[in-house]
Length: 165
Image (tube, rainbow, N blue to C red):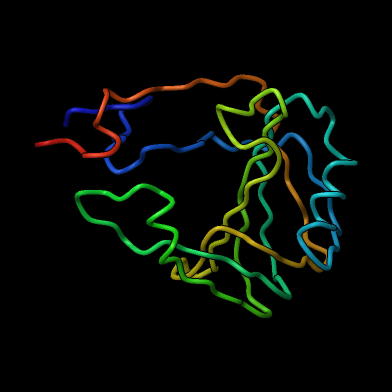
């Protein structure tokens, strides 16, 4: 394997990933939001600091989740803008699962998208995607304060072409 990231994890096929060992520092029970904007506004009021990274996890029964997913890609890998032009949009109603994501502070712009970024996975781990909109119904939101940021860069060309062996 040509590319090893932290802890020996292969970076083949992952041009970018935000990962952490999740250990919640704060749990906020009973969160109700009718859409993603309400949820992020609520979270903005409850973040201990807007200058930190936070990993976020919500396990529960969601009245609504709208998510998108890009189909599997093959070599030569297209630019992201081309790949997402073929994305599928899914709407889930009254579904159980897990929402995970990150809050990145404004100072991280350029290294990561500032603000919130969420993904959803159903409880049976068969469906999900990047969250476009969602509603919560009394779920507990867990926050993991992440004060350090480490960037691991792959050798030039490896992220777009993958290892040769």
